[in-house]
Length: 272
Image (tube, rainbow, N blue to C red; front, side, top):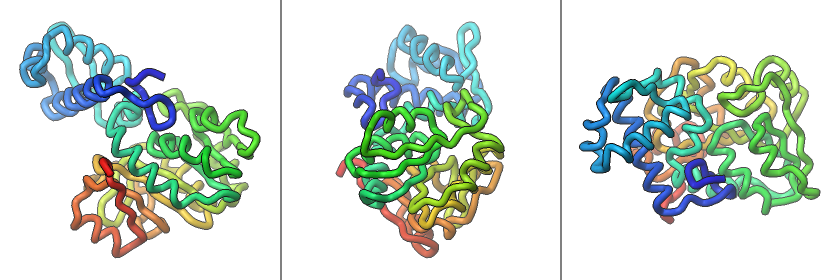
């Protein structure tokens, strides 16, 4: 996999690739904040050439993050690109890797674990290959690829209707498959969280995640700092419903303390 879409265990991005992704993330955030921006303005703001901006915008448009027009670019609705897997794979990579390392400590050989289709959990999946034997259940195609062919892993696919946006399986068949299972630990992420509630912008995803959480003896939520102190359209569940919440050290200390009033909070050091 190229550095552009690298996640832990699937090809580490080089320094230049990481810098490129950071710039593209800044461009996306700048355009979302301003609505419509010219290419020349972006080049000046980012301190790079117009040609570099054109390449960045082409990549972001392919991911469904932005809409290009002659001489400029405009933002798609936040809910559209935040659901896009290609976009999510390229942002806050270091934070997701740190959270994944901390969350991996919750998993012991012999356990049954259920993993959702988030990029934070995809980063975790590669680390779990060293904690075998395991029974792994997932609705995420790329998580299935991480474990496929490993004799020490009992791998169960949670099927349903395939979503190209998420590269995973959703819908009623997926929920029904999940409801038939009972596992030791469920590990998920979601798009937003404040001090007492978690959220997601898509109802179909909420239904799958709720079913997953109900199937676990213990549950863990993996969140990088970009997802906290914010909300989304649909409520998922209260923070108190999770046995563990793992965040990176970019989360404000006051919010960490507030979360700690409801559940076990673990803070991952990004550069530790």
